Length: 67
Image 1 (cartoon, rainbow, N blue to C red):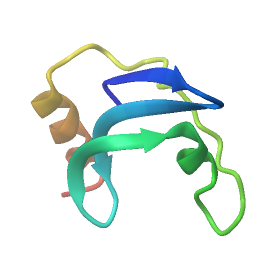
Image 2 (spheres, rainbow, N blue to C red; image 1 turned 135 degrees about the vertical axis):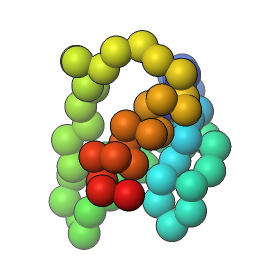
Image 3 (cartoon, rainbow, N blue to C red; image 1 turned 120 degrees about the vertical axis):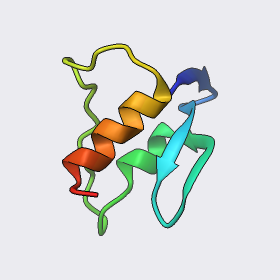
């Protein structure tokens, strides 16, 4: 996610989503919390993330996934 703001009783983010497809878009915190066969997955901030360009961040992600 690159930005976010409260909206009514939720929090709306904008960022790069990797799911069925890879795309930029909006998503809600409630959507993230409801993923996973009815179980709530914890949402965590990467405390060790170092500021970098999007290209560097996605390259690191793909390297960690073995792509």
